[in-house]
Length: 58
Image (cartoon, rainbow, N blue to C red; front, side):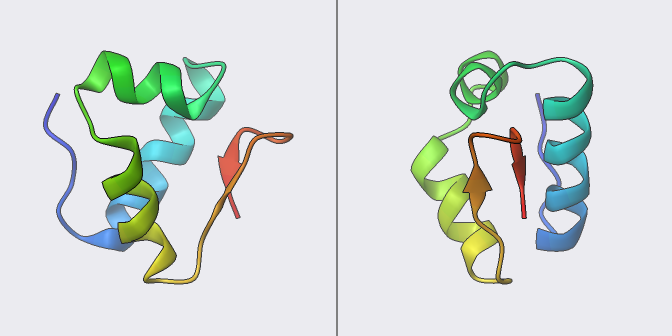
């Protein structure tokens, strides 16, 4: 799966996938072939962190 390069597009894409298809960030990353640490770091750079209770970046 090709992930968006733009951090804000990535945020929107990942949150939509988490909302509609995946029970956790780990499940999404495994299916997408994404590095979970790198994804979290990229979104942290624009002020977002993963909240496992709501299963989205906030």
